[in-house]
Image (cartoon, rainbow, N blue to C red; front, side):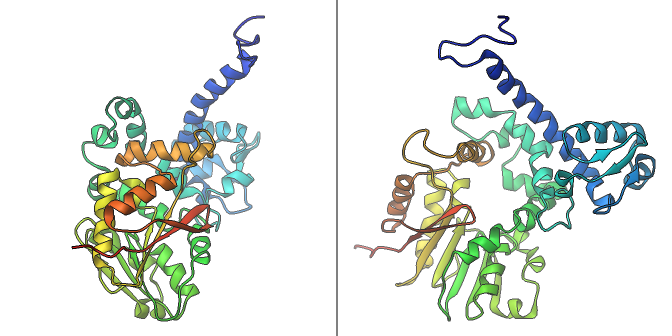
Amino acid sequence: MDEATGGADEAGHSIGDARRLLFGAVDGLILAQMVGAACEVGLADALGADELAPVGALAPRLGCDEGVLFRLVRALAAQGIFTIDAGRMVGHSEASRLLRRDDARSLAWFMRYWTMPSIWAAWGGLSHCVRTGAASFPVANGRGFFEHMDAHAEDHRVFSSLMSVGFAGRHAALAAGLSFADGEVVVDVGGGAGALLREILLRNPGVRGVLYDLPSVVAGAGQCIDTEDLRARCVVEGGSFLERVPQGGTSYVLSWILHDWPDAGAIAILKAVRAAMTPGARLIVIEEVLAAEVGAGDAGTYVNDLNMLVLFGGSERTMAGFNALMAAAGFGDVTRIGDAGGMAVLEARGVDRVG
């Protein structure tokens, strides 16, 4: 048989299947940019949830070229994203409804973030990571990830929106998996605009909170700490967790923070938290945990691991990896106390300092 369409390799796998796998990777790259472009121009939001609209009416509303907008919708509809008929009437499919920002299940910010030029440029430098062991984002974009976000308002807006509202239900699920006693003070270290802390405070009316992140980040806390009660129970403080962490907490939360950093940076963060903790306080770490056995983990976790490398020089870690970090920062062994929102919930307490 022609190797291009059939045959088998030495392991008995279809050559055709192998080719489809590899070509599918390229098709996925192109489809992602098609969806990202639709989100960037606001196509899904311009359509009512169940209405049809002609391309000719949508184009001027969105500031788009009518002919190219038609071609984009036609290509997306062929993939099951939007619908279009012979009269060029555009409508929603189940997939395109998830691109509306007012849908509770919305993936709009997720798609916008992953198709931003700065993110794609970083992934285009993956071979740099493989050769050097260092992040490619600074090489591709001229500065580190967070410095880039501070300097580029639109990228910062997309990233902040993703972290705050882009993971539908994630923060509520995480908060539901955590337990706090009345009177506790929860310090969310690197807590962004406060999406997770908001859910914790809503579920625990007897708890107070401290939201701590860079000043430019907590400037957006009003979108999450958005009621009189929440504002009364939450202190918002700007600063760098590499330098210091607010004191006075009974529980310190690091959610999706440590994987952004190589070991030295992660240990520095943990040491800053440890220095702020008083006896009896605990640290809660929310992260993905790699399976100890090679190949036993979820494929998506391995992709996330590479993503942390590409963007930050960080990594996902095994339980042994977390224990090593904790020991270096003055904590005892990590206990996995549960799973929530698709993430592992880890707990650690400080060990007594000697000398």
